[in-house]
Length: 103
Image (tube, rainbow, N blue to C red):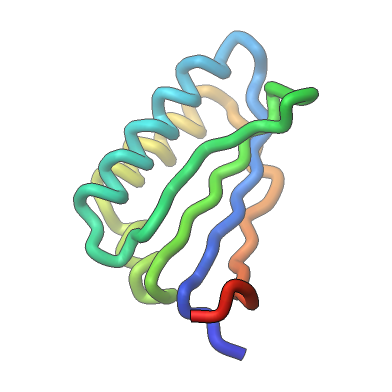
């Protein structure tokens, strides 16, 4: 099974009082990732309509190496530090392979 492209699905739980700031961090990480990382194809932050305290990041990278590069960037460090500072709970981070549409 191929993992190219690699899609990351990361789920977080954030308190209502920290939601706006966390979404700012998500937007910053998203913007910098797409603009600065050749291997980042897409990066979105979404939340269930009926559960605004859950934030899901959907990120698409060329491959695992591109994701590893992302984890070493200055903008990811800002995001990771903010997660800790705000007390955001990481629910899960899943690496997924795309099956459709076919490349």
